[in-house]
Amino acid sequence: MKTIGRHLIAEFYGCDVEVINSLEDIKTHMCEAAVKIGATVLGEKFHQFTPQGVSGTVVIAESHLSIHTWPEVGYVAVDIFTCGGLDPNIGFKHL
Image 1 (cartoon, one colour):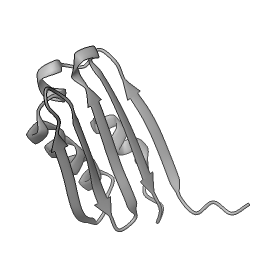
Image 2 (image 1 turned 30 degrees about the horizontal axis):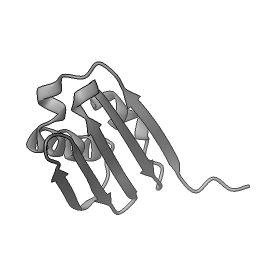
Image 3 (image 1 turned 30 degrees about the vertical axis):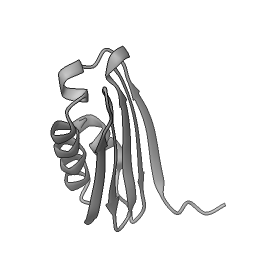
């Protein structure tokens, strides 16, 4: 089997509720993570839920980064999928 990309799926517990319920904070951190791994950002889409939570995706030429937050329990799920030799662990360490 040929490896065509790298991926990382992460769960964060005990997160700062204010940060993970802020669309602007989440968008900033996710876009920064994409840049730190050396990705080419093509676009992004984020949504603030009512009463709480944020979901979003950063589309990169090398695949994508996505996130969903559950502020009510301090939990965040993230996936970072890459190709072209990019290391998703760099984005994970940033987040």
